[in-house]
Image (cartoon, rainbow, N blue to C red; front, side):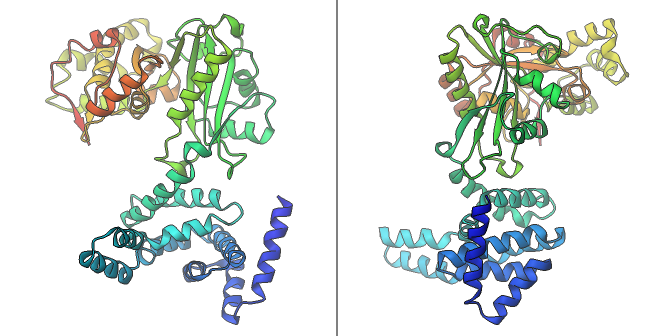
Length: 456
């Protein structure tokens, strides 16, 4: 790292010797407290440069200035990217006119090139700076943070997504096994990035990584060497679990891996919010399955124990509907128990709610849809899109505060049957079919004839 920094510093010094007085003044301001105009001028200079050394130095300076700038200046710069760094309108108009006169392959290529926004080339040049890839991922996080309030940033976000889908192609990723002896830097990030079941410090992490019946795998990118992009935690068992607590219990008895018949994917965490929309998970799961099956031939079942983050919010909306087509008065009365503190500690209340809620949960997965016609639950969309089968509903599988607030404690198992993954994927992708076990379909039978519930 020090050698790279020294090299970049040398390039910058060499380049500065050729700068005009105006450019020197600009660099001096950026090193201090950059404003929107400074960053925009640097972007224009970077796009106009042809020399690689000067381009790298400019890119490094712009990115450093952006990071040091206050939040309002970064937002102003992002807005300028949307307004000033779109396609070159004169070039585009000329390409359209040329294509209308001679619609051949050459004119098509010229038209295609003219439609590309200038900011895409700007991002490519910024990517050449040391640490540029990671800086751009962080810049997109800023875009996502502001997108709701400033919809004009949608084009900037789309360009980031377009480039990242290529830069983070599966062919560039490497899967690594993470264990208790992995570097402290990576282990700290596993603790920080765990998004499903928070890790309560080093002792808890050791409980998840050190025992022989535990595995953890992550995808890495060569430009983000110490930053896992996504990781999955795996438990080796002899049965399909219905609750997460026994898997994470610190006093549990580890299993001899050779005796395991089932691999449980109990936590999958995407770590880089700036890479939203770039899919890694299905590649990771499939490769993990292949590696586990090769190393442990006794494994027969590959199953998740997954949260249901959309269920509680959806059910709350249904309960609030005066003329619900899903819930009758008796069901609403039973569901009112959910509003009572500590209901999950009362056996009678638990049993009544399980009877009422299990068919509703099955209906939620099989029939409730967004206005776009997709299953409401984001985790369901992920696993069904990967070709998994909705295997089992687990009432109070996660009675933690988070599990209760997201899903009233429900968890589900998705089964990855290697012989059926492609078929299941096609059924979901082509027809929107939720491939589910007979048990889940039976549970929803009493509610299935009712109207499908659409939400925005």
